[in-house]
Image (tube, rainbow, N blue to C red; front, side, top):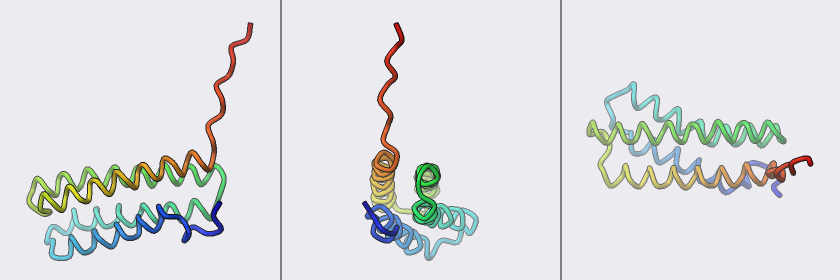
Length: 123
């Protein structure tokens, strides 16, 4: 169990990823896409932190929002790659890291509220 969101590996990894997006997009002149991508990147660790502080089912809901932001950001990486904003090797590195963070978030959600066993049919 954890005592604070700062202890969560997925939060640490998501923060590192957000910083990476700021680095990758530093010279980007498409300010609309750049802003959208940076906001989505920051949203991932921010939602993990907010959900962890709220706890319980709220935590699961905020984990889901973080996963949604990761998916949104993956889509934006694909678009940024196709329009030449991000090089292919960097884009694929970012996509793989986003997929890894999403898997970690799925595991965290399951550990916070374990799945309930399937209901047995009544005879």
